[in-house]
Amino acid sequence: MIRKHFAGFAASALAMAVTAQAFAGTVTTDGADIVVKTKGGLEVATTDKEFSFKLGGRLQADYSQFDGVYTNNGNTADAAYFRRAFLELSGVLYTDWAYTINYDFSHNAGTSEDGYFDEASLAYNGFKPVSIKVGRFDPDFGLEKATSSKWVTAPERNMAYDMVEWANSHQQGLGLQASSTFADSFYASAGVFSKDNNDTDGNSIKQANGRFVFAPMHDAGNVLHFGVNVASRDVSDAVFDNRYRTRMGMRGVETFGGNDAGGSTGNGNRPLLGGVNNSAAGSYDTDTAFGLEAAFAMGPASIQGEYVTRKTKADSEAFEDIKGHGFYVQGAYTLTGESRGYKVGKFDAIKPQNKSIGAWEMFYRYDSLTVEDDNITTATATRDVGDAEAKVHTLGVNWYANEAVKITGAYLKAKTENVTNRNGDDDGDGFVMRAQYVF
Image (cartoon, rainbow, N blue to C red; front, side, top):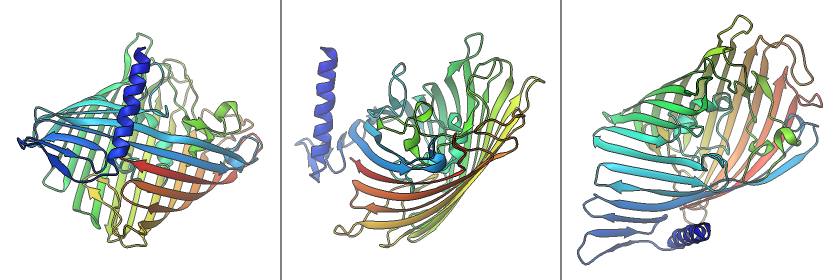
């Protein structure tokens, strides 16, 4: 019965928010103490800004098709799934407190045991300009990760992030983070996190993150951005997943939210470049990631890139360190003249100027990832001895039909070295289409 009532409430809330998209404007009570905004979701706030409540969400429906190294047998496979289906609740309490609860109905965030929450956090903003956040949320690491999934340029974030998923995902743990935007051009954050994996004594894996950004130019269409990131976790005496692997920009090889190619149990191939799952306790000591980021935007044109390294340090003479590094370079141009939005530390939405044709953006990205794992001394059916490499070219177009609807199409070309699928293929092609609705 409780589930039935909750489902009914969720459906009603979602329907109300979707319906609200059709209206615009502001409604004020006779006492002028409450404002209701219905453009882009539903927001209710007091005029003194002491309390607010906002209901929104995002829906991303993907269809992709791929072959070669993207599948285990090299034949063509496809996938149709919800990449994200978020219901988002956020607001302000007593002026200085802010809360965010994002639930993922596609189940690509979280687990059945820990709840499918993309975020569930509480922040205190009374020490301006410092904000202190606690709860479940993604650690700060990287420009593309800081940019909302609604407004990243390509359908999937860069391939180097696949190597360091632990560094910028909450993994069902909890965290405490302090962050600040100051002097108009600087952003900094530092956080500690307790992850959902334990050592042999039952202590959770601890992780520390830090990010610093300098953006001397920080307006839409006039951006110069530099950043540095670091993340480190203690994995001594823990059985943990130290795999360096990648989907090579094609989420449909293994995902949730619908039909995929099946991952390890089907025909989708997610190449393993190094490491193993469930490495023995005492094998490794620390896992460290380091990143650099840069971006420049002038009018409708933008270019950005990031460089990421990871080192899993051995804690036993029986094992060698595992090392990896990756980078991407991406260029984008809005054919209709709009500039990408920007807030210090991250890019934001493109807002169409012409309501009839929307905004059209072309983009190209080059990804490269290399992993050195000297623990591999004998070739297997899918991994040769020596450094493994993966490279991906992505060419695509984004159509921002309006501020709520975005359609994406992208073609991907992948090439690998010293790692193949089960059929021996070391290259592959794919395309992905996405329909996005946000409110």
